[in-house]
Image (tube, rainbow, N blue to C red; front, side, top):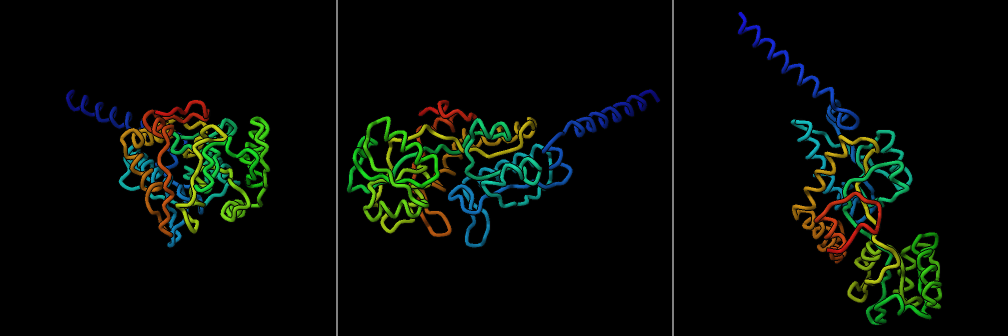
Length: 305
């Protein structure tokens, strides 16, 4: 009888431990476990990070990264299946929808900065952008100093035109700065030789070049008006258990070399739906980030390999 009593106690203890482990789940992981669903926030036109294809299906570099995160969450929670719900978000509602629990991850091109980290958390950086300029190769403007005395355009109301204005004064460039109403108008001014250069986020410039009539006619500067600014997948603040799973998943992706393969798929190859090639090689700084993943919002922390 004693042996059966001991066996019974062992079974009861195992059950209790299992129940205790289940009760340990908190926050997002607990919600996902209970509902069997995870909700991904996506952007409709943030090429090539998160956007809609011809079938109105969200695709992109960030969406592929989030698919890896979903797999990791499913494994962590030992789920046979995990339903993925998709929720479109915008620049203005992405943080509120994350905070109120409508979405669990925001998969796009959101800049990780100190101000946003007061409201949300970010996982390891997946892209670094900077403010640069596009120019016609025939003009041979190889550096910012080459803009001296020239007409330079940027989009009104952006941080880019502010950075251009500051550099114009600090470097005594004497450039004529032209504010454009939108990015399309600004690029058209370079295309029609009304300005020699257009200052904007480098990845946006790359997409404009790729969609132009003659992509081979343009180049994007190596010189930048800003330090590298990190993009990250956004998640709720003060949820360390969920962040631990997400950070581990993204770190494994980037350090394995698969992250660079995904990068080449979206930035160095033809992408749907129009077959554009952004032709944007991975930067030395992003190579360094993939080798040693970080969720830092400090531009100074990103160094070239």
